[in-house]
Length: 77
Image (cartoon, rainbow, N blue to C red):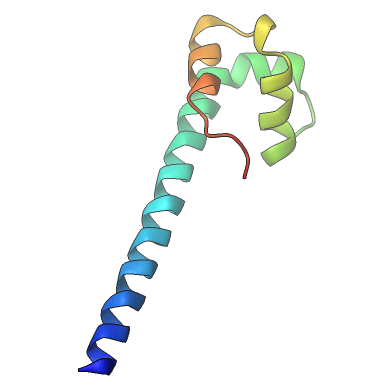
């Protein structure tokens, strides 16, 4: 009984982690698609978290689609 409970808790944690990873990857793809031109113009040479921070820093200069996508990103934890 005890091992079953531990297994269920572990499975729940793994499932939650996998969901969080998938959600982040989906958000990254949406931002990449909406912000390609803005990123090339304002944040050339940056990738990953540096790119995201650059887009957030330059939010006033972003196109409408990019601005909307960036505004939906969760804050960095």
